[in-house]
Amino acid sequence: MSTFQTLDSADLKGKRVLVRVDFNVPMHDGAVADVSRIERNALTITEIADRGGKVILLSHYGRPKGRDLKESLKPVVAAVADIIGRPIGFAEDCIGEVAEKAVAAMKPGDILCLENLRFHKGEEKNDRDFALKLARLGDLYVDDAFSVAHRAHASVDAIGHLLPVFAGRAMQDELDALEKALHAPERPVTAIVGGAKVSTKLDLLGNLIAKVETLIIAGGMANTFLAAQGKSVGKSLCENDLIKTAHDILAKAKSLKREIVLPVDAVVAQQFAAHAPSRVVSVDDVGPADMILDIGPRSIEQAISVLSRSKTLVWNGPFGAFEYEPFDNGTIEVAEAAAELTAAGRLVSIAGGGDTMAALNAAAVTDRFTYVSTAGGAFLEWLEGKKLPGVEVLMTLRTPAASYG
Ligand code: 3PG
Ligand code: MG
Image (cartoon, rainbow, N blue to C red):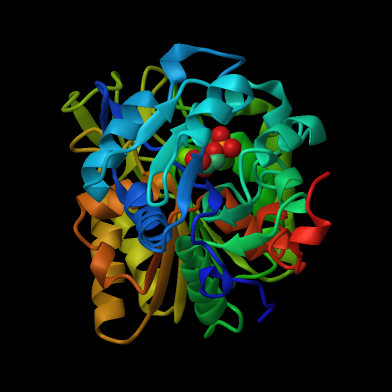
């Protein structure tokens, strides 16, 4: 495995430590709906504080276009303080005088979170000047956000070329666990890819199909494949402009002799809401007013039968609209089966992603999976074998002399 510096070799005492975390957590009615990402980052935060460092937290939240207080990190920070049981200061900007004053007032062991990085355009542009403004605030940079490692953004990439870089505990743990389980996975390998971010993930399936024996396509994404097979999907989520991509992926699977598994039946409703009246239909019988909100019992059986002849499972994205009962059923049943096979020593099960974590927590199976990653998109790109900017940046040893200036 490639080497990188961890907190073990960092001199933290009295230092201003910039820590990239991922507080991009699901929120409902102003409260954090799933705390998993925060809990993972908590280890790094408390360790640095306990070792006398000044912890300066950097994170994005949502995808704001410029400064938009609806996407402020402030409410998230209150939840983080509760979870780690320590006060956390907040600066209403991540660069400039406001941030500099807040940092200058810190004492060793203090924790400060800076406002949403994406309020500044320079963040997503990986802008060096923006990164320099961030880097001025710290002596060291700790990357603890594997779930953002696929983004070449200033707080992930550019900043790592300006300060000494260390992997935080969550990052270290993610990379170790994924490497161990998936570097040379026991075959056959099955991937389940689902969820709602269809367009960003559809392309990636083309690479993934070469790495696995079976690919189960789930969630909203499956609808585009069903449509590519000429089926009607009614009012379901479906990206018609990606039907050609779906065709290409099916053809590639065929030529590589890999199996793609699509739903054979579906739970359909005419409203996207909890307990909306629903019925089970074959995927050949979806009506024009129907929305596919979950997989049906035959598809659940089909998925479980694939898992029982697999040795390794990688899973990103739920099967249905898991946030609304009873459309969480397919995800829960398959998760339960994967957990049982894992507990019986028959399956190595790795899952990842914000929604997937929330779904597995709701199904109470997280502890029985081999490993659950905070990352969704980053996890899939890592699986594809792509180089991730946030991981690459850890790999070059830098000394303070090579720091910004
Ligand atoms: C995520 O939720 O997947 C990460 O926080 C990255 O967010 P992004 O997809 O908006 O870059
Ligand atoms: Mg997400």
